Image (cartoon, rainbow over all chains, first blue to last red; front, side, top):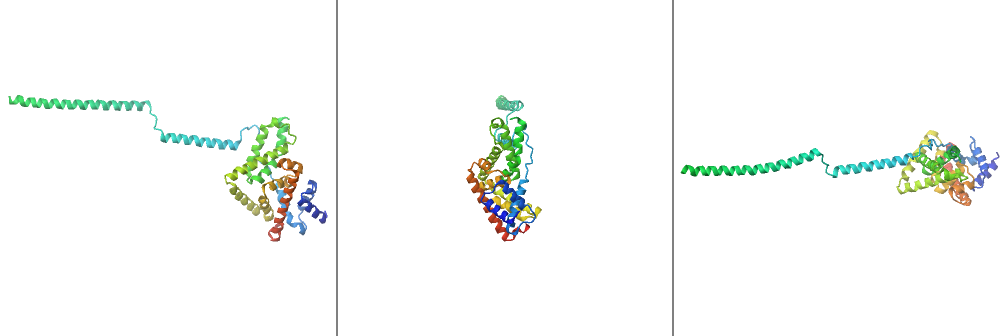
Length: 143
Length: 172
C-alpha cells in the first residue's frame, strides 16, 4: 500500500471518518514489521489494540447454576459474621440459663441455709436451758 | 428462541463483554465477575428478551451499565486508587515480559482517557462495531460517538508523538 494513502487514512481515522474496512487496512499496515518512519509513533497503539483483541473470557458460564457465586458468598459471609456476632454478644451479656440440676442445687442450698438458721436458734435455746439448769443447781446447792 | 440458540448468542459476545468490562474496571477478576453477573441476568430474563433483535448490543449495554455502576460504588468506597495501582503493576509486568515499553505505555494512555472516550474507543477499535451499534450501546447519538472517538484518538496520538520524540518508544 502506498504511503500517501496510509497517511490519508490516518488523517481520516483521527476524525472518525474511516469505515471499518478502511480501519482494517490500517491495522494490516501497522502490523507489518517495518513501518515508515513518519508513521512509526502509531505502531505501539495498533499493537496494543491487536493485543487487546486477544483477551478472552476464561470462566465457564453455566446457566444451570442459578445462584450468583460471588455475591452469594459475600452475603453468606456477612450473615455468618452477623450470626456469630449476635451469638457471642448473647454469650457474654446474658446470664447463663440454669439446668434443672443447677436449679435443684440452688434450692437445696437455700433450704439448707434455712435449716441451719433454725438449728442455730435451737442451739441458742439449748444454751439458755443449760444456763437455767446451772442457776437452778446453784440455788438448789445453797439450800 | 430456544435455550440452546439463546445461550449460543450470548456466549458469542462474552469475550467482547469481558474486554469492555476489563477496560472499565481494570481488574481481570472484577471484569470476570461482571461478565458472569450480566450473563446470568440475560439468562434469567431470556423470555422477555426474545423481542430484542440486537441481543449482542443489548448484552454490551448491560455490561457497560453494570461496570459504570460498579465504578460509582467503588469510587464511593474510594477503592479506585487501589485498582489503579494494581493495573500499573500489571503494566510494568507486561513491560518486563514483552520488553515492549511502548505498547505497555499505550495502556496507560488508554487508562487516562475520560470514561466515555475510553468506552467508545474500546467499542470501535477493539470490538470493531459500526457507529450505529456503538450509539445504541453507549446510549449516545452517532454524532456524539464520532466526536468522542475522534478526541480519544487524537489524545492518544499526541501522547504517542511525545513519547516517540523523547525516545521512549524505541521498542518499535
